Image (tube, rainbow, N blue to C red; front, top):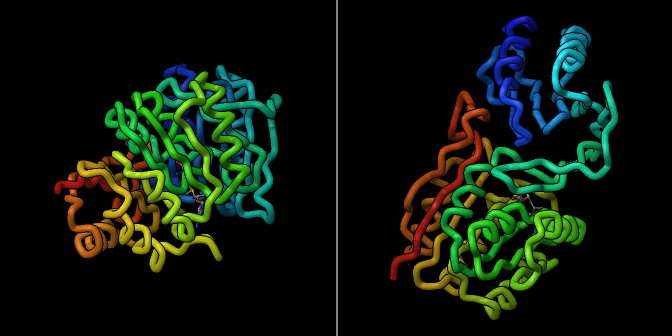
Length: 303
Ligand SMILES: C[S@@+](CC[C@H](N)C(=O)[O-])C[C@H]1O[C@@H](n2cnc3c(N)ncnc32)[C@H](O)[C@@H]1O
C-alpha cells in the first residue's frame, strides 16, 4: 500500500463524522503490507496515530497526515512513538485536553493519550462490551481484571443489578469510578475491590454467587499474572462462585494461545460450563490470523 492509497483509505473510513471512537487504519493486523507498525484512530476531533517501529517512510507519512488533518474536521493530531523509550506522545497539531474521553455506543470512557502505558480504553474489546450490555439485565456481574471498568459501564447500561469490579490497580479502579460518574450512573450496587485476584477467592466467594462472570486478564504481567499458568487457577474456582445459569465471558489476547487453551481448561476444570460461541471481533481490527488475535469466548453454566 502506498502513502497515497493509505490517504484514500483513511479519507474513506473517516467520512462519517460521528463522535464515536473509530479505528481508521489497523496495520497491526498484518493485512496491509509495509504498514504493520501503524494504527490511526478517530476520537471525535482528534486523530491519534501510533507507530510501533521506525520506518524510513515516517516523515512522509506524518506530512500526509498533517495535511489530511488541516483539510478535515479534525483539530488535533497526536502521534505516539511506541518504539522509543517511554513511548512518548507528541501533539503535532492543535491541543490535547487532559480531560478527554471516547464515546463507544453512547458510553463515555476516559482516555489518556499522553500516558506511556495503556490509555484507559481497549477499543478491540467493543464486541465483548456489546455482549455484556445485551445480556446483563437484572444480573449480578463479577468483572475480573476490571482495569478502568469499561465492562462495568456496559453492564450497567444493560441493566445489571450489581457489578463487582476487581483489579489490583487502585489507580485503574479510581478511573473506573470516575467513568461511572462521567456516565451519570448511580453508584449504588457497584463495588471496586483492589484485590490480587489470585489471592482473594475466599472473599469473592463470600460475595457470590454471580450470574455473569467476565475474565479479561493480561497475557503476561510480571509478578501478577501469567496466562499459561494462572488462568487455570481462576477456572478451577468458577464452580464455587458461579450461579446456576451463570454466563461466562472468558477473554484471551495472546497471539500464542488459541481458543482451545480456554475451551479445554473449562472442559477439564469447570465442566458445568458449556461453550456457546466465540464473539466476532470488530471488523476494523481484522487480522491476517484470527486465532492470533483477541478471543472472546462465551460459556453458559448448565446444571
Ligand atoms: C488487560 S487489562 C484488563 C482490561 C479490562 N478488562 C478492560 O475491559 O479494559 C489487565 C488488568 O489486569 C490487572 N491485573 C493483573 N494481574 C492481576 C491480579 N493478579 N489481580 C488483579 N488484577 C490484576 C491489571 O492491573 C490490569 O488493570
